[in-house]
Image 1 (tube, rainbow over the protein chains, first blue to last red):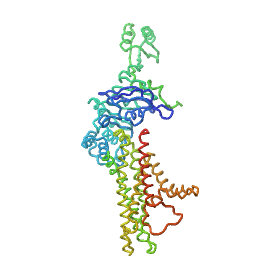
Image 2 (image 1 turned 180 degrees about the vertical axis):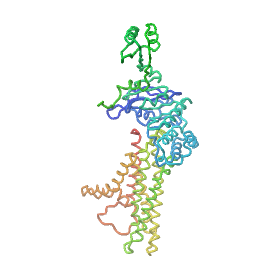
Image 3 (image 1 turned 45 degrees about the vertical axis):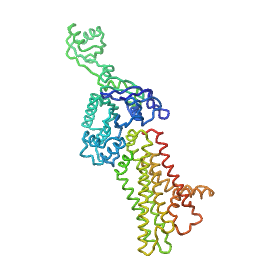
Image 4 (image 1 turned 30 degrees about the vertical axis):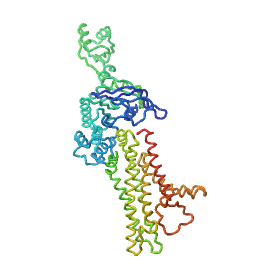
Length: 302
Length: 249
């Protein structure tokens, strides 16, 4: 479990993170979302003691990171770029990290097997594809068999197969009761993966809610109804409290009423309904609405 | 921690390459000198002048030993693994120094013996017991190790390989020669004596037989060793001081 309390980090006169408070709990995948430059990586580095916070407290398994005995047994991390010397073989890289973390050497072969790199463990990491390098990064994160995994943009640049592998891995790790904290600037990567979402923008907390709830709260799902008698249906639905707008010859858009209600009302009024289509908001839409105000750099429409 | 650094040091080719270059350059120049030296003005310590290749190679090795870790981002994993960064830097510096001292002496003695054997074939004989040649050879090797540690210091301070290598070469091989010339006369003699180059020369040439020119400013052997150890201490202390004060990004 990770507890972040009033975290602020200032670079020069600019705050990368400001008054951030949230906790990350075990047994689920927590997505850490925000546009580029919103402070995700800064927060993650601060958790690991790599960036020194300007203010605030961070606790990992109830204690400050710096006083953890053998930190890698608590937290495994995959930071951007993986952090592997291209001239060093995968096995030597893992051996060096294991030695520094005072972890048993047998863990090296165990994690190599887990990520499927056993056969290429002797090759220099510089010869690896991006996907293989990412697997090596995951292997490094798993070395200490940690209860917490901190993954910074783990699917960046991966091919679809690699993306699926990481997703399944994260779900599996959470199912084992571990805390999985994964950052991304793309909502679509979190769809179907994250159980819980922490959303930040411009260094401030925007939302800290279950993924399902985010959709519900920020969805503006509406119905497209095709009918033989748009004029009459508009009157009926408006009387029932729906916001109705004509869209085309025989189609109307309905906000604020369920598909059930529309069908029932039309039936009672004797209006023939040809089609009721639901336009559901995706997590992506909900996220974009949420972070719209907090996007720091944006292209100006031409 | 030392074990981890040991694995890191020897698992990249650049370490081996730097040591080969140091050995080939230093020993190669000693051999060349032994083959071309004129019988009349033989100066055995001149056989050690190839150490300049050793210094360059050791310095680059010192830079790379730490800058490659910053450049690749591995340092984040390392510092997250061992949050007490001074332990990391101490282990790195200690191991590197031990390796450089050993390698420096091996290279220095190898260069000397190569020259001795080749010169003996040409009928010119001298040995380690002559004059202070033993002190010269030891000093030459140790100075190389110090230059490597100075590279390490620059590597920690600048973190980026290209910037650190350029700075290292600029300071040691260019700046040390140029800056004294820009100073007023009354400061020049003392400044020149304290430059790395002249300290190294003082350490490597106690066995020198020919008298020095009056304007050749060189410290005495003991003083040179003292200054070198002081520089060495600063080269290790600076990284230890700065490493806990910055973010790792």
